[in-house]
Length: 310
View (cartoon, one colour):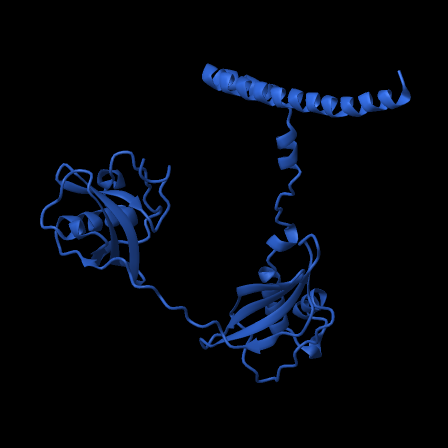
């Protein structure tokens, strides 16, 4: 055979071989689809076996996606650290740098000068509380601390704090600055818009709270079936009187107890008494109608065991 004829046959064989490989690939794909549909038709057990024996190419690709991890530094809040520092700083004096409060303040903020109060200055704050923490950048925080004094006045301080990469160490990086206090937030309109008159519902609320706060009677007798709730112990008050009850649902204002399983959410304002005086208190409760009476299904203001209603 001449060389030219051999070359011509080789050129013709190449496309044929490529076509054969493409057809074989298509055939494998068709067979795979038939196998999958056969497994699905065979039921969940066969499908699980098929999945277990299938190569985990997709699973590996999914696992390669980086997961979002919250670092310790992002979770750390230096509010408590700033609170301790401001308390020590306000109770220290540059004239007595060796006092316990001065040494504590200097250990927490080595580059911050101590104050120099006058001899007749107001007394140290009664309490110091962290009220707001804001992270400015990685490891940099601004903490607002409130100092309350005996006369009722409150002064707010902004404290810059640095945190290490692990969020386990803090340092006050600058002198505190006196700032305006946080603005008062707008309170949304209450959902308890239905006034509940004196009657079965308000009486049930009063009797339950009396047992709950004074120990007068068993709490269980006022609870819906399946609800577990313990009275406050020891009982903090000697008497409890309901001042006002409001509800979300109109059914709470009905003259008669509605059908079984009717639920209402109420807000009860009460006055509690003890040997030291009278105390206004408020509670959010859910009550449920059963057999012509109201029973407490949940105490939202407290902690119900086993999640309250079951």
